[in-house]
Length: 149
Image (tube, rainbow, N blue to C red; front, side):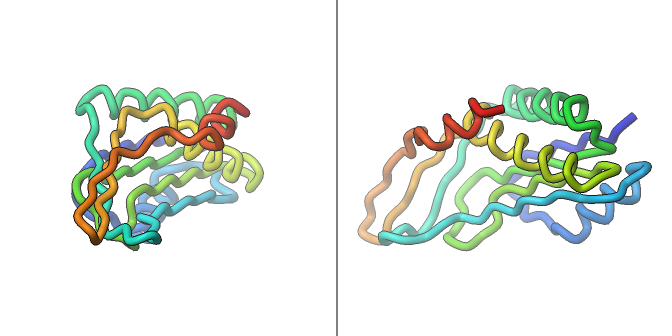
């Protein structure tokens, strides 16, 4: 049974420890795909606040992970998404996939990040140096990437 680890938390994560856990708990691994997302700065952005719908959010992420495991024959995957107030440059999301071959691991990683970006119930508010706070709208390019799967 492939390992599926889903975490939604305000706490920081350790990418090295999470990768080691995935490798230790998954069989037949020949490659690991990874994506580490950080809060992107620019235009005076100082922080991003993420809210989520507890329970539902984890359920959606679990369903996406199960789909990725089945679709790409993954030996395991980890999805960690932070919530709360995060400063520019802080890690926000980690997606790790393990598979027998690199192509499956890389495809599984891309599938998961593309699909969770538009399909998981997270709401983001940008906070700027001048005091403005703006809710983030969905982006057409994110929707197109998710639809491509």
